[in-house]
Length: 268
Length: 330
Ligand SMILES: [Zn+2]
Image 1: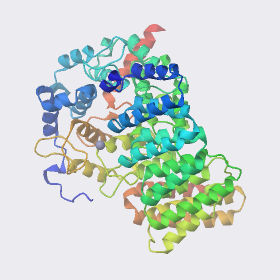
Image 2 (image 1 turned 90 degrees about the horizontal axis):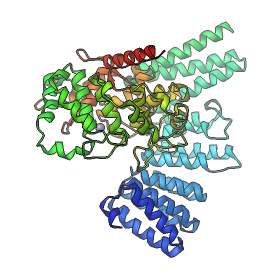
Image 3 (image 1 turned 180 degrees about the vertical axis):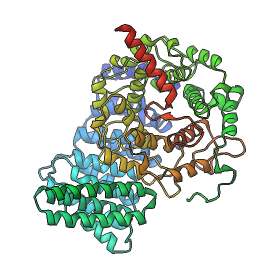
């Protein structure tokens, strides 16, 4: 143990310790004692990769009964430093190994409730929602759109929530595209018709929904619907040139893309 | 926070002050900073030298002494340490090779042993460990690919698998993290885009979604942040901008506003650039500030290659060297 205290990043010392644990039979008392020791060490060295690596092996070997203990430990580390990515990765490993998806969804939700701009918590929610097995992907999509919309109502300019919402149609098992999920334009319109008529992320997502609808209508041979959706997208991008001048080059690029789509319509 | 209209003396790049600031590190071997940063000194030297090259002042540095020191940090396993007294690590192995390239001295590198070292760190899933301790991170994928490409030995790696691992770290927002499932971060985005560019596998990313995420990083100050809802910081001028540049979307951000933010972060007295206007300058942010301005085409600066983070003229020499070798072998 002295060696590890002196240089806790020493690979061979940890590997050797792991073999000793296994040689000791790795019974529950041995593993519990090891977990207590590691908790002390981790408190002193929260960013040591080897320590977390050892801890992950130990957690997976101790089994599902001790998983809540492990999640509590990682949560305590994140309470100290929300950016400790070792702790996030530890939670992901434990959650995936023991199928603790519902508990992790609740954890991410509690963190988002405490700080709606916690981007790491949004990422963890995505990890759960995209990884948890489901028989009804449509219901998951609807639930998550509603969740994101509720968080957007709390803070309409929060990029993390908008990025999450925009990503949802890409969830595994979804046939849905941006063009077909009615909850997405609905929250955009709700924000824009309320106190935030120039909210850039709402305008940007709504513009992309209209652009996607234009493409879908064109694919279906409906030139009238395609032209109407394209006009709606053009209005949003035009509004963004004023609302978000820092990214005006990007909005002009989007407008140019719409225009080339219109030319293809004319040819058809 | 906004950047004021009148930047005073900081309205232009203070080339002489920055050159003197960087040179002062070479002279003050007794200083605290020198010892405090010993474990990553190789990267510090690379940042300083590349900044000097971009400023047109590389000749102010003692190249012979620097090369001697770099070679003294080579380890028996073929890698380089952060200093003479530290073990090999991919981060410092890349910095060492970049310094050799800066001085057109790649022939002084033991190419065979360095590539063996780098290749030994590749894992079955295509990822790379940073050193023999085993930590996995997409930063190390970039280091490995860049290092071997500079040495003309990409064939020593399983490039296809390396690219697949990087692609597996792509997130719903188009960005990349350290490992699969890990949150997107602009620093990792540079590493992953650079790695895919070197691997010839840029088709594995969603160009428009990623570039939108990158240009969303620009804040009202003109500066860029590394993740949503975080503070702007000069170093992201490089991490975000280089990726946009590799992907041909540099013009999607407001370059004039970013230039002004970087200039505002200059120390007009002692030289150097800090992460934010109110903070103290350091070599790291001085390099990334100057490199960001170089990507934006700031007048008087040498051009920089966004993939390799080396001056364009240096990369031309590296490519000519490899072409000559291939011609001689065939
Ligand atoms: Zn920084």
